[in-house]
Length: 119
Image 1 (tube, one colour):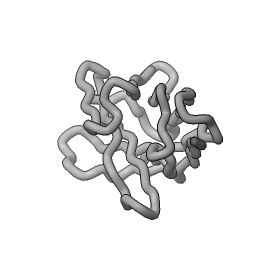
Image 2: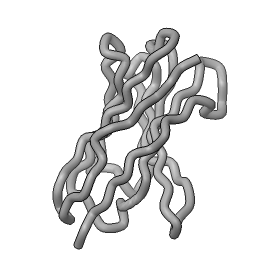
Image 3: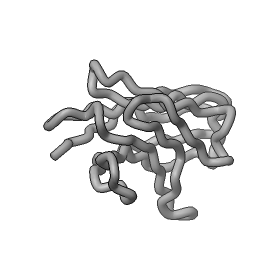
Image 4: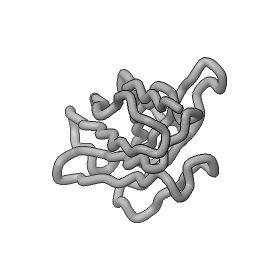
């Protein structure tokens, strides 16, 4: 099992930046594909970004391309989401997720961290 804990959320003005961190514990995290999702009352849960367990492959939602960057440091068992040029519509609870190699569905989830972008 893998436990995920997010941090780094907060209140920021539009145009600002935040970096979210997702710290993993439990068994080795280095062979877990990872992703970030977000959930808001207006949009429900939506995919934000993903990164392969090697760090060599990334994927982004169209709404965040060019503004957000996902990365990982397997030596630190941590996945990051750098968020720049934040917009009010980025306001949501952000969740870190993981899935073992060969699994399609994400089955490890963190508790979420709130990101609020003021206009």
